[in-house]
Length: 288
Image (cartoon, rainbow, N blue to C red; front, side, top):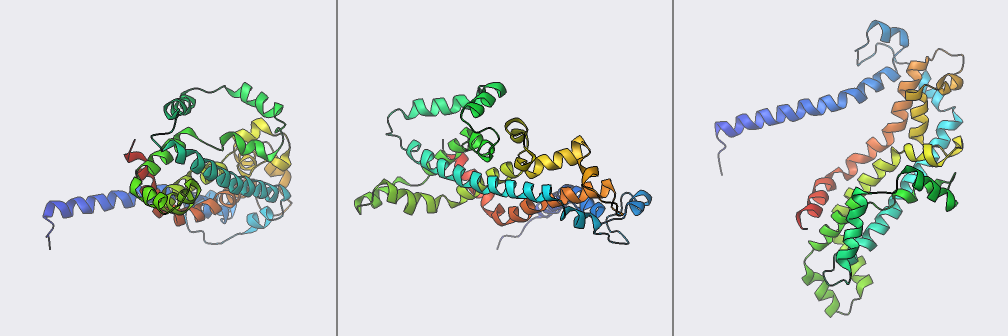
């Protein structure tokens, strides 16, 4: 057994202390918003930094549950997140697998075009006219298709698949497997850490999307949750006041509750995929 020296123990203490303080600093804003969402507004005015209120008030959450716009936003966000992630992973796998083959004809040219899109794009107005010409304006697909496949993620996925030993594929070919069987029985099972990482990336991005909805939709029924949150909290367009009843809930408390209501689901899902995150990300960035 190797005994750690004093320097190693001091480093560990400093390291754990720093990580703990940094984690608390990241967690504090969310806990603060949660506390404000159940704190009476009069108590907040007296003690603005109190994390544990003396009296819990859930009127803001009851008010949110009665807002049809919030539920429609939830449905839109859940749909574009699930459909967007499924489409993204499908396109990612079927595109990265052939590009990982060194003997693919035109491989370098295709990769050059993919890298080109990372630095240059058509711009906002051409993209808008493209969506409108394709008949996708004011549809949920306008929130899914434009970002269905990212060049950066595609390169990482290609690198991850390239790191899988070629002997595994060769053994499968000897046993009579074709490309489809190799993809679904060897490549995809071994790529689960990378796939989980990209699921996190795309799910968080789709859940938090709002700018594409501003550009490609004009109906409130198609607004994702974050666009509703932006209008309620950031823009202060009066939507929160319009939704309030004559109860004791203030506009400030309602905004805090809406923030929690909108961000809690993705926060709860994130830890279940976190253990795959670093393994998949590093695996896709080692081999070029």
